[in-house]
Amino acid sequence: MTSTSSDQPTGRRPARRRWPRALALAACVAAIAAAGWGAWRTWGGGRPTQPDYLTALVQRGDIEDLVTATGSLQPRNYVDVGAQVSGQLRKLNVDVGSDVKEGDLLAEIDATTSIAKVEASRAQLRSLQAQLGEKDVAIIKAERDLQRQKNLLAEDATTIETMQNADTTLRAARAQINALKAQIEQLRASMRVDEANLKFTQIYAPISGTVVSITARQGQTLNANQQAPTILRVADLSTMSVQSQVSEADVSKLRKGMDVYFTTLGSQTRRWSGQLSMVEPTPTVTNNVVLYNALFEVPNPSGALMTQMTAQVFFIVAQAHDALMVPMSALTMQRGTARGNAPADMPPRPAAPNTSNTPHIPSAANPANASGSAGTPGPATPATPATPATPATPATPATPATPATTAPAASARPISTDAPASPPNREAWEQMTPEQRQALREQRRAERERQRGQDGAAPSASPLVRPRRATVKVVADDGSLQERDVMIGISNRIHAEVLSGLAVGDRIVTGVRQADRGGNSASSRGSLSASPFGPPGAGGPPPGMSPAAAGRAR
Image (cartoon, rainbow, N blue to C red):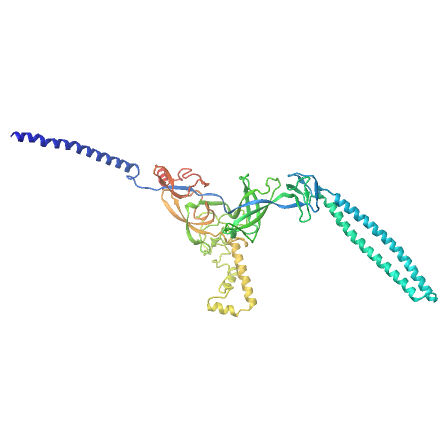
């Protein structure tokens, strides 16, 4: 019994030690579970996940589709003034930056040698003229001798040989006079050269302008025997020429006469405008990069533009004024264009002044308004082309009340200007005379030009910009999202013009805001920092939307 009593305390001690450990382990598990549940509740695990949208308001503004390039400024008209005679540059009358007029004396070259040559030529000319006078006297004497011999021969007082000798002497004197006259003419020509070289020692301004550079210094000896050395350059800075280099990927968008503007490094807020004059057909290749030179001129009355300035050039491919604008990040583009199959309820955009001959077609996607009738922007003004009670659109092809307009197109449509594909068309084409075929081509060409004029595009407009289909998510008044089809016109990397489907004040989704690891919000789609619509959610919730719904829509 002694051993039994001693064993019982020994068996109870391990049980007492296990209870504290179990309690500590349970407390740790409870703490971990509480922390996990709190994190789950804190970071949204316990609430329904709602995406945090970035939104913007549809507003009106100006939009431009641009081709950018880098160029340099050069004077449109400049002359490198050089020396035509050799000698020492004795005097230079101008400095760099001096304004000169045509005919002003710029520089003088030592004329000692030229003056000596002119004086020697003049003395030689006087000698030849004296010899010519002597020969004139000899001719007079030879004529008298010949006449005397003829009289003596008539009286048989002399011989025929003596008379012939007198005639020969007269002929020789006349030949000598002709030779002296030729020498005098040659000497006079040489004198004109010497006198011109003497005038060339004084250098005058060939044009009015500004001295932009001087390459020679006073006292320098100029050698004009091999090539004319350049002394200075005179440039007309009233009109500058901009030579910009456009990549081969963008040169196809350029056309002669399109509007263009540029900025300089020193005046990035000021724009100079002009029109494209030409695109040189021969490119320059630098490091396997093909660049084409595009040239245009710009007036410079104030003289703010200088030679060799770097210009950031913007060619306006298309532009729209006071148009509905949305960020490109809000659009989901659809395949294909809307030309020819646009919805009939798309209203025409109000006409804006087009100063750049842009290829924008404001009503090409709306056949119902192809005749140029006025329309009210917005989707609430549908126009049905087949409705008989629409006298405002007499040029609509679907209107039966315009047989004079649609009849030529209907008669010309079955026959193509090329070889027709169907047998009846081919037979009709082959039965026509060459004159009839040419008349049909002209008729179809006139019909196309007329249709393009009804669509709102000028006959010379480029078909680079066409209406396109896209979808956009619009925030409704109750905070729900609606996917809406829109028609897009001019677009660039930031904004796009909306032709139909949206109205001013509509709130659209431009992206989704996602939270980073630190709990800060980050946008997953295009930021609106460069957008004219302002920061996301600016202006408060739309009318009729509760703050809670607006918070969910954001």
